Amino acid sequence: MRYLIDHVRKSVHRTTFANDSCHFHTTPAEKREFSEDHTYIKKLIEEEGFEECPFCKINSVKPNIKDM
Image (cartoon, rainbow, N blue to C red; front, side, top):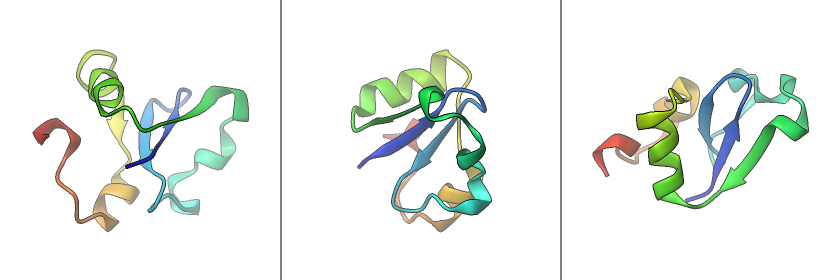
């Protein structure tokens, strides 16, 4: 799975479900990154205070990242 990481809002988006409701487009491109590294995403959430985007999460049928 591919993720969009917003370092300004400290949020993680699932690229498949990311849309205008997520507001990631207001973050400068240099403060965003893409990753498919699940270990890195889990570390951001558990250790660095990032959160899963609620708009992406509600549209997803996948389990929470923390549960994986």
